[in-house]
Every structure is written in C-alpha cells, then in structure tokens.
Image (cartoon, rainbow, N blue to C red):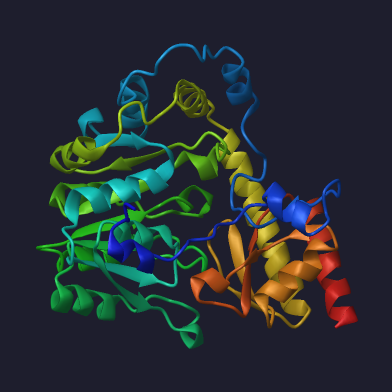
Length: 362
C-alpha cells in the first residue's frame, strides 16, 4: 500500500464560511430559506454586466495560460507592470504557490493570528514550520506590530503572512505600519492579504512599498466583485517574485469563465462602491444593535463583524433554526465568537430580530 508523506497526517483541516447543501441535509433544513451571513462577499452579488458576460462563454475552448488579457487590465487598474501580476484560482491558490515556491521542508513561516487558516495549511502541506503570533482578546485583537517585527528578527521566516484588514477580527494596519515591518524583512517575504480592503474607508495604499522587493500583495476578486463561485484572485509584487510563482503555477489555472467575469467586473466602475456603502451602513447598524443586546462586538473596518456569543457552534445551530447562518469561529481558535458578514440593511434587521429571539429564549 502506497502511503502519503508522513507529515501530512499532522496537517489540520481548514473549515471556511458558506452554507453547504450537505449541512442543510444533515440538519433537516433542505427547502428552508436560510440567509447566509457566514461568507463575507459583496452583499449585492455580482454586477449585472458580469452575469451578462458569462452568457457568452464558450466552454469548449481552452483559456490562454496565465490570463494575459486580465493581467493587463489589472495592471492598468492598480498602476503596475503586468509582469508584476499573477492571477489565480482565488487568492487561496496564490497562498499555496507561495508556500511551494519559497518553503523548503522545515523552514519557517510566521502568521499574524488569529486569522485565515489557509496561510498555515499551505505552508504545512509543503513541510514548513508555522509559527503564529496571536493578537490578544483583551487588546481588541489589535496586532502588536513591534512584537511581530521582533518575531521576524528572531525567527528569520522565509514568509510572513498578515491579513489587512484581518479575517475574522476586522482590524487594520496602516501603510506606515507595513513600512516599519519591512525594515525587519531582509530575509523574509512579507505577504499582505488585502482581500477585504475594498470595503474599507480610506484603505492604505501599499503599492509604493512593492519596490522594496520584500512585499507581495494578495487581492481577491471573489470578495469585492462577488465571484466566489468562479474563484478569482491575483498577486502583485516585483516581477522576479511573480516569476517564482509562475514556475509552480498549474497551467490554465484560471478558467475562461473566470477571466471573462474578471474583465467585465473591472469595466464596472460603480458596483463595488455601491456595495461599500451598503457595508458601511450595515456594519454600523449591526455593531450598534448587537452591542445594545449585551453582546461584545469587536470594532471592524471590514465587511464583517466578530461577535462574542458564549459558544459559537451552539449559537450557529440555533440561528440556523431561525433561518440565519453565521460563521462559527472555533476553527480560528475563537470558540466563543461568531463572524457575521455584512448584508443589506433589511437582511441585517432580520438577523438582529433572530438574535433577539435567541437571547430571549436562552
């Protein structure tokens, strides 16, 4: 019997937000209308122009490897050279490419947590040693930047991952914070995941810092453009870094449908801004109303809020019975919390009504 590499037995699973049909069936909820607050995507969905573009897809043809047309469009949008961009099957694929390209077995990666589990999982799959610096609950989950810099100095990781704003806590660091961290990265590539940045007010611009050659930015069109089902993301860095990622990238990793949807989304100028306004309104409403019900809501600049509810898995279960799905944060190491994605105001009002009923029955 052929056995997999021994270290893979120690690689944990990594649950994510969403509402799978298998869970609906197991819970006896098939046919029930459930509003999904567990994922954190554009509350307006994909733009109509994106849906129209998908109707003209010819699935019989191969995509052009490397998605050069989409790369050029992205380069024009962000003000970069197209040679400094790689497109992926969601930004998650790019995390795995980073681990494959840069980590030898036993080499270190540093992760600012609690955060998205795929940073660590990708590094563990290739045999890397993952170290985490956890933000403290008593400090509102704000990252201790000086401690993170000292950890880079001490551990000399090949990769350091920072989600900005962070999933699931909603905390943000500034451009000057990142510039300070880069001073510690003479032997480290700092990876900043900006998947949720389009929903922020006054987002920091890290593009000028790419010239250091020590920084890579991850972007996710899944979130802001509502393309979760198609999977589309990209990375921006110095061309030499992008070349390293292309060496380990699978051919045809971006489908014809995903590329055409991405191109249509980039031509749509107002959709993301409309969604951002919806997020700002819904986030303020949820933070105010849930706090008023006696729950601790962590201040957030992202399109979700982290809420302390006592026992996340149990709270998720009772909310499901009321037609609302939230994200149990046990897999983040936060079993007392749930993450609630921001949806439209009427939907947020339905969530608050459901929470009020759960608390009344407790």
